[in-house]
Length: 112
Image 1 (cartoon, helix red, strand yellow):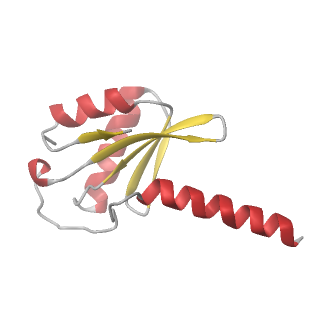
Image 2: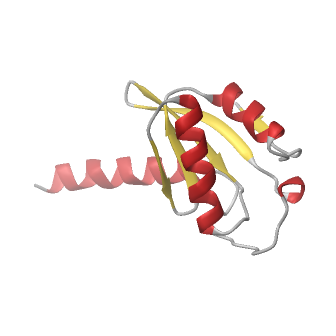
């Protein structure tokens, strides 16, 4: 029915706004070093669940997939990459931030 479609499109729009924020994460600057990337870490709520978003990465998509795999392993949780944004299940903002700093992402910051 039409009301269900409207609700679904509103939900999709909300998630898209959460995911993208003020940064376009689809950009890939092939040889960018971690120190130059303005990475944002944000914990958002989806329904009753928490999701940690990592956006602003400009490395290749393969490098992002590798980083996502490392994060999922170290945090013991699930996650995915959508439109260049890494999404981790759970509220891992501080842990992700510390991990990124350790990996050389010195311009990483936590967005509230």
